[in-house]
Image (tube, rainbow, N blue to C red; front, side):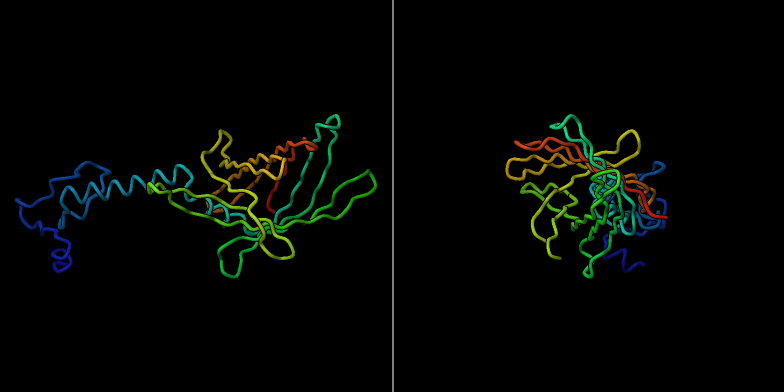
Length: 227
């Protein structure tokens, strides 16, 4: 321990002259009193800890947390309201399976549902996405994160659909992420809400507001874990 202390330039406070002098308030980050770091090192460490706490409060780590919390089987119900046709509604229901990739670098979303086209007839539908946690820094060194959603066609990732950025927790306890996607002349405004219970999720609500020359509708999907 003494060798480590000398390497870190930390004094052995074995007498009263070298007793701890800094960060003595309850709750402060300090080294054990016998090996007290100097004030500049303690302040730097506290600054780093405060920065990590701030990142956590702002949702910086949520892309990985959310991707992990989604793993498993879900049921979903989707209601689509068309504003071009006097608010005619479409209804889809079914199951969703989230599974990790072999490389553990993304989560595959597989949806299988029934699209109700009349009171007596439904059509089977499916879709796939890849959910990819992403972390980056800008030219000024500011860190950011997102949960990126990619289209999957023919079993292969194609192009980016959404880059969801978690920013706050709403009054109902859902973490909220938003992003827009312009597909030619159609604008998709996405709102992704997830309620976390520790490292698991109890509900996901995904809303798309879509507007374009021939589109004007809102799609709301509610997912709950299969029991």
